[in-house]
Length: 581
Image (cartoon, rainbow, N blue to C red; front, side):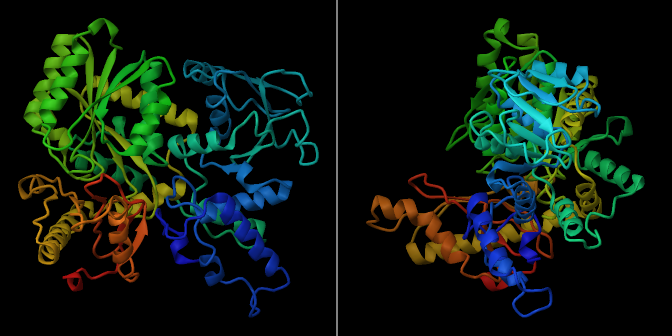
């Protein structure tokens, strides 16, 4: 297998999408059908690498998961783009339920026990879903206007394309769409990339090994209970709260499923008003919008672009909500990235805590301060908040595909502070995550347990490298253009407090006399030039590396026309930054 097929981010200079990747893969298989393993013409790693990439981020799809989906599709004579694998036993059904627009979904499970309990079906109903489980086999036209699913043990491959079912649920957590008018593939993809993940690479590799009659060596290891306990304790320590096994972090298969579990838990607890930054990470914002179709969740935003005050904008937005307390849901969630995305701004924590307490007093509603610490996972921010506002409910959300897993897997976690309210919400989020079966898989927990030690030191080194590289870049721009280009980053005073984000942001100055077309293409041109040095950089949508540097520079590049790059340069793990001077 090509080494670049592993990890969490993939070179998107040859990004194909699942459909075109599958077409190229199947053409390769046909062209090499007569070649035997070990022969000169047999498929080799270079052949696979030359296919391109199905997607650019593991949460969306990997080449390995797409190969696995091709194997499943070929077994049923279906188009691969109509087959979806999940790292969750229940999400193939839940994805259909959530995209049915409230219309009934009927699931036939033959003689097997119902895959969902009455309680779980009730929870899905709170989310706008209508699911009914049936013993036996489906009958054509029995459910006019409804979506019909059946387990693969109930419907065999020969009649699975008939009128009896719209989709088949595989025992390996897969979904085969047989009626694309009733189950829209693009809608299923949206739910999978926002609320779940495809099958993980080790699990897919193990399944492919078994399919080929090889020894299933992948995904054979699991972390010990002691290793998991150490990992949970370290997450709590890095977040700044006391180690408490009765409130262990909720760890999910990716960051967005973690947030989804929290939002849906709040939905089931009477709803919430969610206040977040207008420039928050796009995935978080889009996931929140997806969840807003449920009646009990409402989203509003604050703005910190340009010279806007971080604290002032939050205080104004909270004030606007508090002005109409009768319209508020039971809980208000202030979701804040610290430092901010993409400009790395830092709020005044004392003022932020005071604003939260004042809001609770004026509105009469509970406020949860939810801090995204993905940029600085070891900031111990919950401890700082406790010192400032001991009774304020607070949680940390952290995406761990970056610094914590060192780019080996995706994962996300929720960490609650010491307050009873936040711990109750943590437990409710865990219940939702378990119902959706989006908790981290065995192979993910293994990689998290192996890599979490040393996060603090790695982030410190990455911050130091970032400062060095930002200075070199700024100096080069001034030398060649005469512009003193500002670079926004976390300052040394906040880095000393543990906010060691290794991301910086800047606006490239437009060339003199440049046309709008040149300006619009400037940032992408910069990235293209930078990534010509393939030994040190690769173009990818996100970041997260394992190695000596652990730097994640140039995360966000902007030009005066506000046109963004489609890629972000990613420093390769074994690269030496010194020659970049």
